[in-house]
Image (spheres, rainbow, N blue to C red):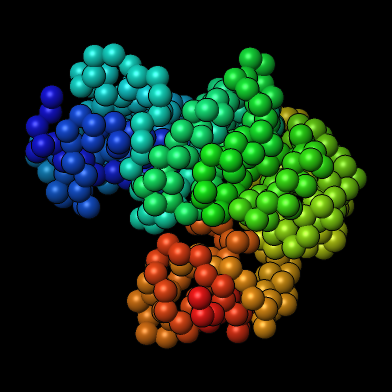
Amino acid sequence: MPKLKNRIFTVHLGCSKNQVDAECLVTEFLHQGFTTVESAEEADYILINTCGFIEPAKEEAIDTILYHLDSRKEGQKIIVTGCLSKRYGEDLKKELPEVNFWAGTYKPGELLKSMGLLEESVDSYPMRLNLSGIEHHAYLKIAEGCDRQCAYCAIPGIRGRQVSRSIADIVKEAKALEKSGVQELTLIAQDTTYYGHEKNAPDGFLIDLLKALLKETNIPWIRTLYWYPAFIEDELLELIASEKRLCKYIDLPIQHASDKVLKSMCRRYSKDELRKMLLNIREKIPGVTLRTTVLVGFPGETEEDFEDLMELLEEIRFEHLGGFVYSPEEGTVAEKLRLPAVSEETARQRLSLVTELQEEISLEKNEALIGKEISVILDEVADESEFHFYGRSEGNSLDVDDIVRVVEGDGSVGTIRRALVIDAGPHELDVKLLPE
């Protein structure tokens, strides 16, 4: 059993799914007698949980590893885990022999066992330490891996085919998180709407999971991220519309809207199908917040294809949007496509046009809320004298969406309050809290 002098500092890179992995890893170390520290200088072990999805993420991960190797004190040990080491593990071991321990993507007990700290692997997710710094919010991973074979994406090659967790296992973790004080639960997977649809899945689909969470917990806000445009049935939408505790918020990355580009991307839907689906969501869930992600500059994308995308964005008017420029990734279908490349300059110009359009839409949507009441979760006390708290509305997901700034009223972090919107920008709402 390690002594308490084994202090660990964690560097988490990448998405919320990767954050959950880091939280599970740190919790396993805590169960073995380790303690967490707030800085690398205090640590005996530095755990770097990497992302390896796209080129900028890989560069950030390598830079982070090199920084900690160069700055570590005598006796400090470096542990590298996550997508980058899963994807390039053998090459990295040769290039960076100074790293003490390597592991791929999270598997319960695997890292500790390889370090000689655990005799046998474990089968379940431990109760997790929250690394977000916001104790009233938690991500809950409902499945691992992905069965989609999108041409640009390396995730299936890194994390494998989708494996859904059982409803009972997820509910058990949700109840433990609720007991720890969680007021907002965000369900995540690479493809949440595909939950339970893979062969030999344990039991039930997303709608069954949501019903179980509503029945077995009292968590006030439950939201889901990363819907693929499939398995979005009216019954699921009607459940979200009718249940107050299910956030009226859908994160559905469309990637593109040109039939030609969607086909090249191996996305299994057309522009018309996508349009009908999005309009149906708006109809079935009044007041829904729609978030999406688009990818521009994919090989073969013409000006006409880009106009198809802009036309759909103009019509649907997503409340939130993230945009990216295509970058070729090793081992993906897109890497081998014999299609004309789009220059980086052209791709970035197109992304700028998407961003400009979205700024206009977001400002219009937010300004329309002035004078209206909304529910706000108070995330943290604001340092600036002009604001009391920073928080989010039901239509804002943690880390990626707008913030709400409380300019008047008192409350407690982690509570959900009614508030009046008094001002707005494209990325923020200013509110005053209403009396309880």
